Image (cartoon, rainbow, N blue to C red; front, side, top):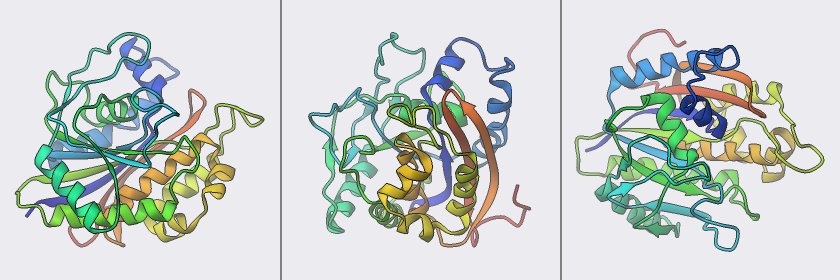
Length: 288
């Protein structure tokens, strides 16, 4: 059967893509941010996953406010980067893991989830940026992807506990999939930020740091929080952090944190990263 080898959490701030495209990686404003991802990149190189399941939200590029699915799963052969208004970015299209996508969709339905099924869809920075942060910008991606879209923009958004529950179903799908492929799951979004309204520009570094600790040590606490608590603590757009719970729900209760990184602000956002392995399966190296 297929095997889950790790869970990654990361921000997907669009200005990260702009910094990479403009060659700003080693400038004073960005070097500390990008250097913090080097251990995560090394982890990916060492463990060489075959499939990356990426949980993210579309930002009005593929879905707009008139039609927003709560959960959607891609089952396409290929996912091309969508033009977000500045022209196509110089990155390769992403190859889909079609058979697993259908298996996961069926497992979701068996567990009383009703996702939108996307057989043709483009992906924005919500998926592009996390892939670049961990895999760089190869001529061809060394992993296949399974995109999971979560609505964290148009209210009502799903409950944090529902995202956590979806993660458990994702784990069930991986462990029942007839393949020797190695899976890694990326939960993306956040950290704290608010782009509009009376609190525009809001970031909460203290809450961000607590979240990075709790996502490993006390995910039940995060899953039990209300949607309103996420908005209050992390900002209206910081509600994206609920998507990390899909990744965390697929992991064991006890995990080892291999790497963790926090940077503020990346654009108007608290930005963070974490690399986790299931404790029982992890090698006995010290956690970072």
